[in-house]
Each structure stands twice: as structure tokens, then as C-alpha cells.
Image (cartoon, rainbow, N blue to C red; front, side, top):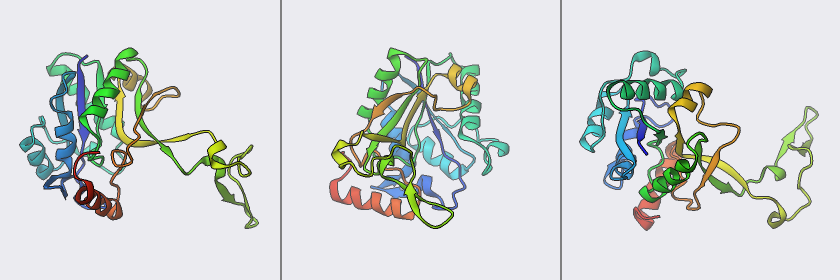
Amino acid sequence: MRILALILARGGSKRLPGKNILPLGGKPLIAWSIEAAKGIPDICDVLVSTDDEKIAHVAEKYGAMVPWLRPDYLATDTATSVDAALHAVDWYESVNQPVNGILLLQPTSPFRTSRTIAKGINIFSLNPTVPVIGVSATHLNPLWMLKIDDDGSLTPFINGHGMNKRSQDLPVAYIVNGSVYLISPEVLRFQKSFISEKCRPLIIESEKEALDIDNEWDYNFAKYLYELIGSES
């Protein structure tokens, strides 16, 4: 397999300014994802797409390929990750060989391990026409969720709810944790989404690996986890 690891790291972040290069465990946040991808045999390159010179400098320091700064039209609040990913892979394949898969690694998932990435690639290699998505079991089961109606009353969010069932009798529900997206360039170009109606799960059991840093609380919690148990999951 030839897998292009792609890290999208836009400079602007309103909820947590400068989050992609904030320090965690003695190195910038983005370095965790670069280092996790490097050294995996199936990964041909680690490419960082950014519009920010500081992020580009940090990414290159830790061994990523940063061939250009992302065009302005792909660095706005309305630009999608799909558009940025297709821009990157189109460029990469134009100057290198075609790739079998695009491995999107969000820099906000610092504790995702090389072992987990390799497991995802193994799943993908069985049928590259079907995307692989990192997921985690959630204790917030949708069959126990409620909504507030117009009259102010609480009613089940889902018809056929499980409000009267014990938690252990409910089916396991999974959420996309943002740590791994793996898809073929052809499928991404066709459907313009990393997620299909049918995807294969990369189940991540470690709550630490599944952590996605979106705001200051998440970042402080990540620092606490690192101080508590270090870099190993």
C-alpha cells in the first residue's frame, strides 16, 4: 500500500488560538501526529497543509513535508477539510506516484498511536473502496436521549427509545472520535466526504487515544493526562 498521511493545520482557531502548535509534553501539538505517522512502512509521506508560516516551520522541523502554504481560498472559515485534502492529494499525485489511500490525521488527536494507525491501514487494505473511520464507544447512548418539545415537556429523542432498559441491555453506540480517517483518493473525489453510508470501524478502546482537543478545557485535560500517565496509552 502507498498511503499519504495528511495533516490539515489551518492557522486560525477561534476557540483555542494557535492550538496546532501549543506545547504538550515538551513538543508542539502537531508534532505528535507527525511522529505517530513516520516510520510506518505503508506511509509514503507525511504532508502538512497549512496557511501559517509558524505551523509550516514547526512541521518541517519534525520531519513533515510542507511543499507550499495553503491558498487563501482554502484557509477561510467556510473552506472544508475535503477541499483542502483534495488540493493536497491532487498536488502530491501530480509530482509523485498515485497513492492507494489518504490518511487524514487531525493534529488535535495527539495520543493516537502508531500501532492504531497501522491497524487502520491493515483494515483498509482488505477493501480500499470502503473508508475506515476511527470510532469509540460512548456512554451517552442515543436511546436514552431526550428533547424539549414546543410546550416545554421532555420527550424521547428517538422513536422506539430504550428509556426503560438497563444500560447493559442497550446496544453499544459509537461516535466518530476524529483520530483517523482513511479513504482512497478516487472515493473522496467521487463522494466529497470522508464518511460513506457504509464505513468500516477502527475501534479505539483507549479513552486517551480518542481525545480530541477542541477547546481550552480539552487542552488542559490533555496536559493533565500527559502529566498523569505520560505518552503511552
